[in-house]
Amino acid sequence: MAKEQTYGEAMVELRQIMERLENDSLDVDVLMQEVKRASELIKTCKDKLYNTNEDIQKILDKIE
Image 1: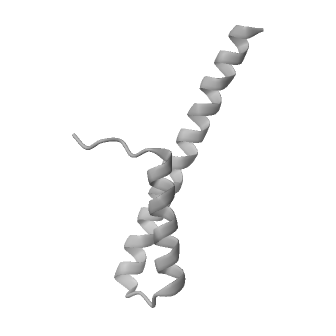
Image 2: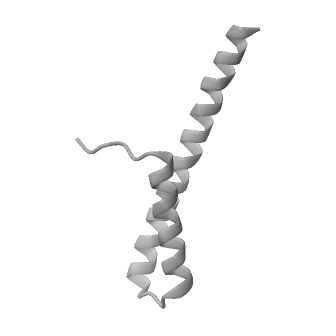
């Protein structure tokens, strides 16, 4: 089973994709792959941020 990508790893990969999109004239097929991967990474990051926020809120609720 593949190791789950961390938020930091996803952000690094997303930045690399963005650089390639900005700096290279990509073939349409490669462009599509890059955009699909970027959308997956964005979802991963959003999910991790949401889950982290939920976890922090639960901790804060216990303190009150």
